[in-house]
Length: 270
Image: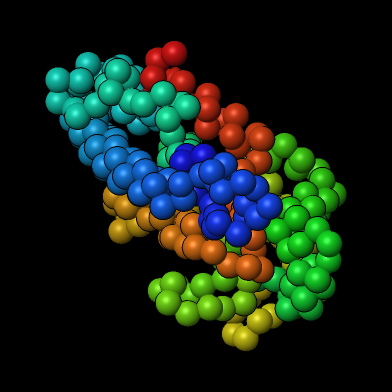
């Protein structure tokens, strides 16, 4: 598996192959960890630059310009940490960084919605016992319900999780992610799709609703502060092996991936 992918992998996944053809997994994990550390620093600098340029806009009484961190409309590069030449190539980005870029697009244009969706235990049992497995059924059912709602090209990502908030204990499988909606009604349609795919009948699990969809926000209540918090939260255990989930528990729709790639190209002035 590529170092840029953040899903789980272990040696038993390569059973039947000659020993010398099995990749050095521990080395890959170390390289992935270093890549993620570099990207977290990159995110930190991008957000610092966003705050710097926002301050210039306010002082100059200029309207808010989305993504001015990467385009020098206001000629503030002398005061910022980064320019297009400092940004890595698309091929060097990990899936974590791509998820952050997508979340940032939603925040910049007030079109991002974050979600959590629980899955009925009966569906988990049935899907896990099927030949295709749990994750394949999750993707298939969500795609089918999205198509029924008429939002086939809606950009979204989803990660399956089986750990509690702290990550120390196991819990029932559930989903986290976000979508980008130009129309707020699409967020409602996406919520209906989640409900029909994983909790038909709008059932409740305990005291919490089975599906929650809400506008994305900056953690801490300040613009740009903690913008990576949600992505860090729902990917925190994505590289930990869980037999019920298998290797790939992350899915990014083609429409979202293309949007992310275009946005990164703009930032690099390609």
